[in-house]
Length: 287
Image (tube, rainbow, N blue to C red; front, side, top):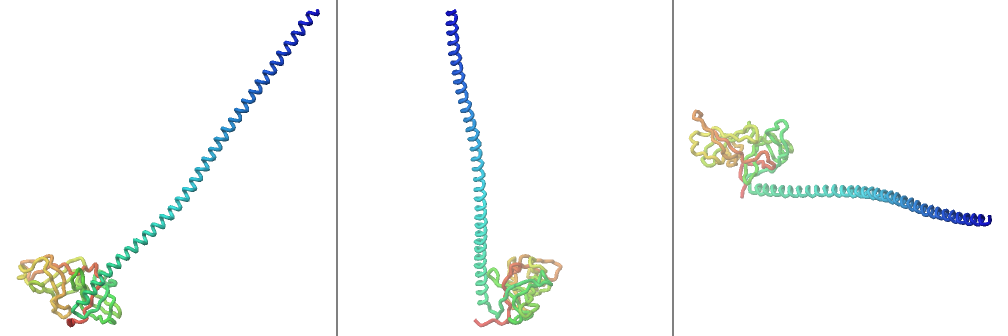
C-alpha cells in the first residue's frame, strides 16, 4: 500500500509538470500569435493609411496644379489680349504713317503742278457725288465764295501729266457740281496732237468706259496710230487748248460712214480722282 501511494504521488507530480508545461506553451503560442496579429493589423493600418494619405496628396497636387494652370492660362490670355491690342495699335500707327507719307507725296506733287500751271486756278478737293446723278457728276469743296462759277473748266494732275476732268455746271456758296468728261452730256472740241485732225469727244455715262472721239475726217485713217494723244482744241471758248484728254486705243472705221471715230483711254483715272484745279481765267499767267 505504501509502495502504491508512492507511485501515485510520482504520477501526480509528473502530470502536474506536464500540465504547467502545456499552459506555458499555450501562453507562449498565444502571446506570439497575438503579437503577429497586432503586427499584421498595424501593418495593414499603415498600408491603408499610407494609400489614403498618398491618394489625398495626389488629389491635392492635381487640384493645386489645375488651379495654378487656370491662373497661368488667365494670365497668358490677358497678356495675349494686351499684345494683340498693342500690335493692332502699332499696325494702325504704321498704316497711318504710311498714309500720311503718301498724302504728303500727293500734295507735294499737286503743289508742284499748281506752281507750274500756266492758268489762274482754284485748287479743290472732290468731296462727294451728286445724289441726284450718282454715276456722273461729282462735288468739289469750292464755290462762288472762292471764285468758282458755272462753265469753268476743271483739270487734274495725274500719273505725271495734266488732264481734262470736265466743267462746273453748278456753283454754290462753298461747293460746286462738276460734270466729268465721261458724262454722256459732255462734249469737248478736240484734236489729235500729232496729225491735228479735229473732232468732238463725248462720254458714255460711266467712268470705266472709253471716251469716244467722233466726226473725224475719213482721210485721217492712215495718220492715226494707237497711243496718239488727243487734246482739247480750245474751240468754243470753254476749255483751254492743249489740255490732255486721252490716248487712242481703238480706231473705228466704216466705209459707208461720212466720218470715222476713235476710242480713247482717258488721261484721268476718274475712279481715283481726289484733287482738281478749277481754271479761273483762260489767259496764261506771266512767268
